[in-house]
Image (tube, rainbow, N blue to C red):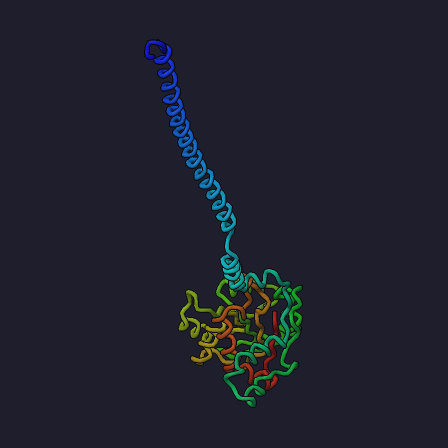
Length: 287
């Protein structure tokens, strides 16, 4: 029987056996390839997810990038809190000539919490205590000629030492010198004296006032008050008190805008000038 089959039997067995092995190999290779493809797909998917996650993160990050509203409001509040200086306020406002009500308000506001109601009434000045005010068109000489039309006669009648007939009050030594230069066309033969503290000792000014007759005094309120306290300047002969009210310095400040000058001016008015005004002996002018 083995002889009858011959070689074909062995060939058939070898063929069938090889096919099964090949099928198994192909199956294993297919499964391995499938597993490799799955693994590659699995590996690709996380990268896609991670990229998407990054995109989402960047989107959310982009949404959070704009400045927080609290910070902007804080910075704007800080800007709003900055106070305007006197220079800023005066630069934006048109200059207005001074009037008697300005002087009255200055005294009332300063003494409001320092004096009783009766004492505040005593500080009030009538309109008759004031001369006509400068309307910002006059020079100093033209203004003085307007308020003192009989100046030549007044200066001749003045013979008292340590006193002046006309007292001009300003804010600084430099302004004092400027005003004395502007008096040239008005004063005539009258003698003017500088009354400020810069580079001039008070003893020198006392001697100068006692030595001869002076008609016009120009200076700062602090030095004028100091001379009055030392009995070096007598107010009995005083007839005209002119305040350099409208002039502004480089920072656009008027005399009453400077705190120390403002206090010195109030002290000067309080030390006898107000009493002389009420007695109708002194007139106040605002230049």
